[in-house]
Length: 427
Image (cartoon, rainbow, N blue to C red):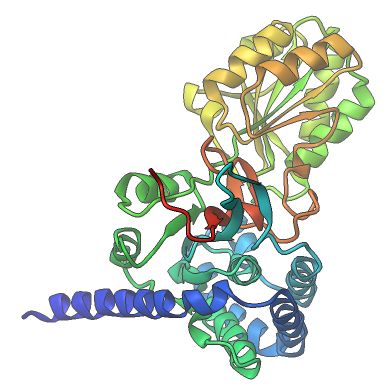
């Protein structure tokens, strides 16, 4: 056996061994009491803050390596931790601890004519795999949501965050052990090669669901290569349509917020659509406001020159792009119908927004746009589990089955039927 093959086998063996360990502890996690879960989550939050220096040192190693390797600033921003961000991550765990436990919730039930009492209840999914890129906060978010919903978490982060993720998981496992819970409730998988992703997403019988969170290429690779059920979290080509009846000052403020608040997140605005019926001066004001904020605008040069704007030339690909940078695509469309048509063609189905004071335009837009979130007169930045009151989210689902939009505790459960009789037999 050659050395590369031996290394490859060792990696596969590690993934499967950790998956088996997760499967073994899953029944214990499924039956944890709510107070026990909450006590552990609150302790984890406190410990993350008290051990921040260790976490930041590990993160510094990842940042230095990323910068030396030419990592883009938007990705470095996703990767970077600070004391403030660690406090925010810990706050997410505290918020999850304060949320209602979905496990055991009775969704429906009745007593049959023969006296059998039946009910449908929420139960954990079991072993939850996560594949994600350079965002160490996802490590903690996944742990918190998995524990509260009674699931074991198998985490496959990116090589660019290896030190950060390893330190975070060590902290979390120490908290679990201190509360007499299995360390295997959260485990970090090897990340040296992409092969470990394939091992995870094909571990049928050991892994119950895999959730990819990251760029389009990662999500596509997981969804198309998996034999384990997946929940697809989509990329965020989010649109903001400025209707002829918009309050222009508010529309510009919402657009700038959605684009520039944090360019590296999936709810950032990536395309602005301008109603052709807007006065030319208003169209120009929108484009100039973006440019004054440091945003590079890509669009049809002739269409924008017609109202006095100078923009970068846009290709067809620009309108489907999730930039994750200080760039935005711009197009002039024919009213609400034109906006809906453009969004249907290019949107990733994540979040699309409208600015308008016309109730009919708002109603038509909300009804016709087929996205996980449709926002009326607000920034696209509000598509976020914490903003929704869910606590830390596991991702934003853009698929239509099982879960859609921000996924939190209920979305990490399934159901089972419990029938209680007294000796009945069926004829």
